[in-house]
Image (cartoon, rainbow, N blue to C red; front, top):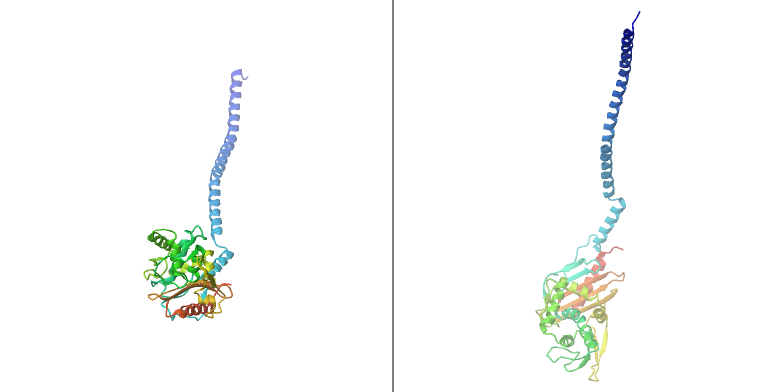
Length: 346
């Protein structure tokens, strides 16, 4: 017969065994769950870094795709480069250099490209081309174009106006640019009542502003041989004056009648540009305006803006031609040569 204590001990022994048996598989399950959770945790922690690395690589590739020029872009860039090359010499043509003048320059007005040149950096007396710069300074200095001005008394050579005659500022302006009147331009400057050097300083300052690096003005008429420039600098001056209608219009006026306010006699004034007048046949499309100049030290100078019938515009400078007609003929022939031997982007 089993007593009570033995039964109790038997019961406890059996239950402990059962609990131990139960705890073994539970522990295994917990271990496996913990290991799996740890693995998943590590995997999830690394995943954003992997995604970041992938997205970064894709971003670089995208940037490379964006930075790579498209075929259309390359085509447009090539077309732009081709345009910058125009006007260009036709195949097999060599630029002519034998021109009967000290300096010759032909420049494409639109691009600024020099198409023909001879001694374009050589300094040369300006003569009456000086009046273009005088006009630029006067343009912003004269307030009243109807103002009456008495022609200054001096010994300057002039066949258009005489000392003591009275004209309006507008009349003297026209005589200066159409007929290249020395006394007219001098009287306009004199009417400002500025010190002589003040006006010259403005002329030379304007030259600096226009990048005319080899130019110096010593007078307002061009009679002074110390007023010097180069063909390249003069092309810059021509380009600037053509922007101002007040200057450009007289340069394209063939003739005017000039009557002093205090006299009855009327003078007939012809433009000094014989290409404009047609006295030198040229068959050019259009003459936009030009200016002549002559003193003994300079020979015969001429600068002009012309076009062909297709509208291609040239800025031309001729310095030191041998005679009066030669400067116009050299300019005409230089223009013709360029139009015949260059091709433009159409």
